[in-house]
Amino acid sequence: MAPRLSSLPALLAEMVAVPSVNPLGDAGGSVSGEARMGAWLADHLRALGADVETRLLAPGRPNIIGVFEPLSPASATIVFAPHLDTVGVAGMTVPPFSLTRRAGRLHARGACDTKGPTAALLWALRRWTRSAERRKCAIRWVVAATAGEEEGSAGAQALVGTGFRADFAVALEPTALRVVHAAKGIVRAWLETRGRAHHGAQPTRGDNAIYHMLPLALALRDSVAPEFAARHHPILGSASLNLGVMSGGQDLNIVPDLCRVGVDIRWHPELTEAEVLHRLQAAIAQHAPRATLQVQRTAPAFVTARTHPWAQRLRRAGTGWARADWFCDANIFAAAGIPAVAFGPGNIAQAHTHDEFIREQDLADGAEAFLRFLTLPAARK
Image 1 (tube, one colour):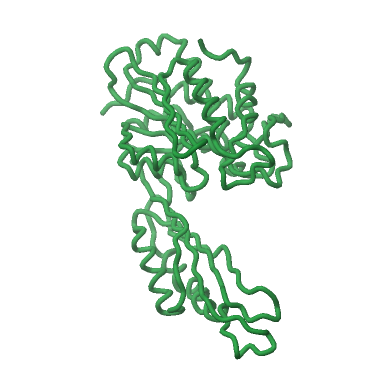
Image 2 (cartoon, rainbow, N blue to C red):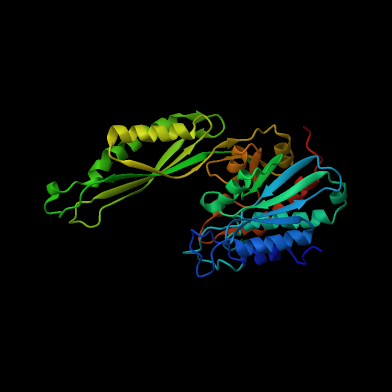
């Protein structure tokens, strides 16, 4: 029997009341991790009639797989892929785990990214399971809710690493119901130079790590970033490099023995991850030969053709096409050979904010869009 909930906002309120802050985020005094959210979702999917499996990445960190098998042999397997985790709650100006309604907006951590889109999907599935379409459907619909999307897409990586396959994947993200069919990849890296500390009154007796870094930092600005910007993709535009962090030294009167620079590079299929890393290494070799490079995180770029039949079906249910500079689990599914897009109600500009919200009307529109996708005529191959 489907859960008895009075409204879609009530469903979202129940979800945000279950904290699921990524373990690398500030849990605001609650227990971090996705265990409780995973258990809640597993119970909800079972109540809707899905066959549910829990796959643990690590203790307290589940992937939840809910399968709605058709009554006849499946003609296709289509995956909805929300993520269970949220970012941290430090500095929030609204209650993070209690849904607050203000002027048509529903505020809480995860209300936009991505418990709002997930609630819209669950509400649509609730209606679909009660409809005649459910009995006639020949599609295997799967809800694959992943852990760890906010920090490295660990859950999606684990899922595809076990041979998980599908004909199409929809990563649930706040895209204003536009089908995000292309997104850039990332390389995030730390560059370090080391020196020798000494009293600042005698700087020549030390070895200033910041001075070793300066030529490299300037080269990143003046040479490497413009080179990336000149590499253009017809859909995703230019690649980019941002020097986001530069730190070094302990005090004004000490010669710094360490300097660190953090860079965030967004690349597209006209480049490769190997090319990006090679260009960083070349800059190091030329401008700071003693510097070291440590890759913090990478993610692949992807482009799913607008002509893909399942992407077209989703477009008919939504509001248009889009591309993204940000990344999500769709990048991981696409890299594993599963055609993928990102899609859902809400605005990405509200994700991760101190007053995170989704408009109540957008939430309702999202449920209608997911229901249309579930019930539109089957995609042609």
